[in-house]
Amino acid sequence: MSFDNAEQRRAALARIGLGQCGYEGCTFPRRSDRSKHCHQHYNRQRRTGHPNGKPILSRQLKPIDKIARQYIETNQEASPIAAGLRWAANWLLPAQHSGDDWQDMSYPQVRDTLIFKLERDGVEPVTILSRLATCHYLQAYEPRTILSDQHFEFQVGKLLLRLKPFPKLYERYDRVSGATRGTYLKPAPGVFRWAYKSIPLEAHILARNIAEKLHEPEVWKTKTLAPMKWALPTHNLQSQPESKK
Image 1 (cartoon, rainbow, N blue to C red):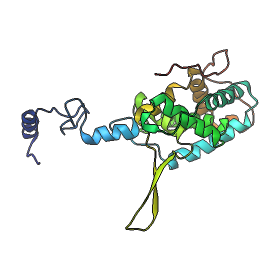
Image 2: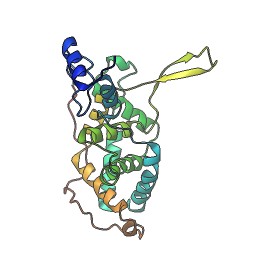
Image 3: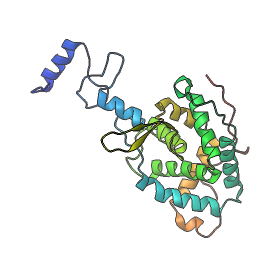
Image 4: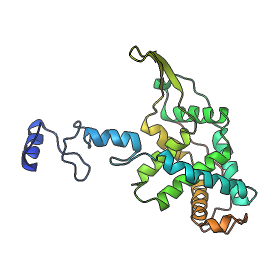
């Protein structure tokens, strides 16, 4: 269906009872009466956490993550970094395996099972902390990488849970190529937001401090931990118990 001008588009939308997409500048119709976005922006929000967002690519992530890991390992005996590593270890350990019946599991159960698999597969606390610090670095110093708070929450949760590949659900035989292809779990967006909610505020403050140091490499390459710009709370970084729905 093509239109010569915006007036014709609006008239057609009015006839079929659907309004325009809620994203600013988009003139396509909403995908349904209960949705505020068109199909394109709806699918993009489910994939990235923002109607016009993009996922964080490996070429953006890996160089910063490598430097963040080096910084954490260099200063791992300093009290703030040691507290952050304790938090990361605590984040991995309490998770429970709720089974493999993914469709009948709630968002917190899927999150806990994926975190359990990270711990079982040998993901180290330093990897968790460096990935969180990398996300804060990209938010602060890479323009247009993170578009909103919701986009940031989604990407942080997704990048933490994707430190290992998602579980394989089943395999199927491709008659055209003759190869056996695996179908992997695709968690709902709510799973990534639940993963973000499990991170305490103190861990975000520490990750933000690490991002500040990564932006000033001459400070930490001397193997001394400069004073943190953002004050940490006096108590240790511990993930608080959370009630499950």
